[in-house]
Image 1 (spheres, rainbow, N blue to C red):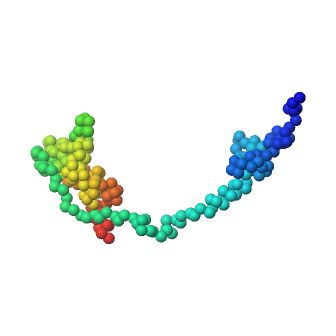
Image 2 (image 1 turned 60 degrees about the vertical axis):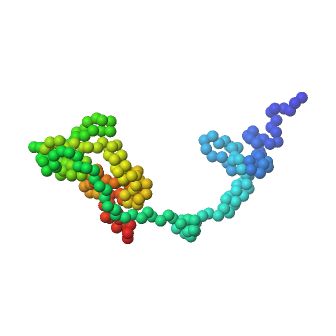
Image 3 (image 1 turned 90 degrees about the vertical axis):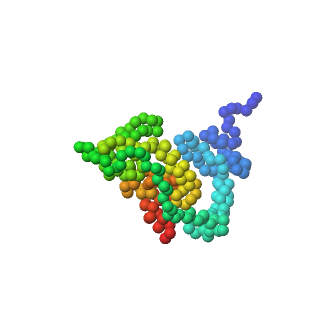
Length: 228
């Protein structure tokens, strides 16, 4: 006759849970008291963690023996850790503006009875757009070769956004106006926040670093900060 199934084996407690457990690290069978209890909703009474307490202590001691790098402020810079020098930025002559488009002079512009100047143009997809602006802005756009006079109350923008970007990058030969390295962004010499406009006279090619460093500062401020 086989063993009575109602008889609990030696490794089972009264609650039908194993009295010993094999450690997942050292492989030895040890009492359940040598293992930490599991936590969580699915953990039972006899649910224990895989590694025994002794193996966990050894692992903790080994990890504490690993040297930890000191904070950056306390590190002594080595020869290989030397930071690259900042790019040299100088004030260069401004690029030549494009030839003035044919059309009436900006002096003929007059605001309408509502006190506005009509401005129209085309999107990158060729759709027409229309908006209103003030006399001062309209005159600046015409003088800086970004628009032409249609009549005394209306101007027309020459470039779409895409064509304007291509024109500036190709005019400056994809060279940053500030540091002379490769550039693929457009920067306003006089920031728009200070009254600058997106015109061929006020925009130059810039690298990403110079564009971000300059931010909303004027050209003189940007160059003088670097010289200091």
